[in-house]
Length: 266
Ligand SMILES: C[S@@+](CC[C@H](N)C(=O)[O-])C[C@H]1O[C@@H](n2cnc3c(N)ncnc32)[C@H](O)[C@@H]1O
Image 1 (cartoon, helix red, strand yellow):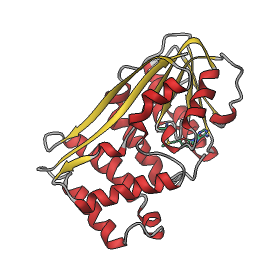
Image 2 (cartoon, helix red, strand yellow; image 1 turned 90 degrees about the horizontal axis):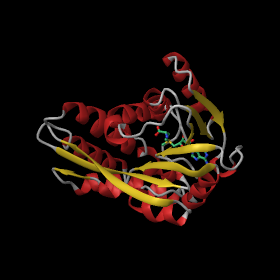
Image 3 (tube, helix red, strand yellow; image 1 turned 60 degrees about the vertical axis):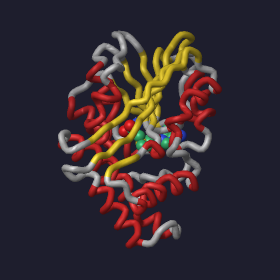
Image 4 (cartoon, helix red, strand yellow; image 1 turned 180 degrees about the vertical axis):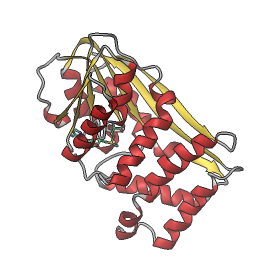
């Protein structure tokens, strides 16, 4: 993995859960696996998505892997507390998966490729553990799709810090727009991508809290120290940017962001 730009703090774990809860309807409502299906979730983190997948697909067997032992411990704790019997968590690296070829009926990947130096190679490895005819679902964001009202150059610069830090760590926070070519290049067929826009205004207070503030602004705030330490911005400029983003979360503000959900087959 690259240096993971969001880190593994308790605050980031909460952000991942907030993100998954807020976006479940938009991103996951159309993902359910049939009884008996074997599903691999690659890069499951603290289990925010696997819990939802397990609930929506009670007859499927979900194997969720991540490279971080700490995140897996949190995920195991959550799945036990939820009493879900159909998820198993395992420590594994996407680039050296401990599974025989053609083990899984489906693969699910969410918010992971953006952090990898070699996303196409990761997809190729995931393709190998899929059965012929099996499906992959990939969900990624694209920070270039962020726009808001009132517009603010300060806010745009703070967001750009996140983009630049992720690039210098070997990742790509603009990867959403590349899912189609990446999946095709990695050997998947029948690839189709659906853009999923989050639109937030004053009439949607749950999204103001759950998405604009607790998912997006929290993510930007999380790189403040790194951005200043790397000389990308000074502290005052960054704080002004975050304040302006927060202004877009006011009752008369508007915030937009687009996720990309891709489906393909082996
Ligand atoms: C932003 S989190 C997303 C977690 C989860 N999919 C979600 O949507 O909440 C990215 C996760 O990918 C994991 N990861 C990064 N590189 C990996 C690799 N090479 N193999 C397995 N997991 C990896 C990180 O440890 C982290 O938990």
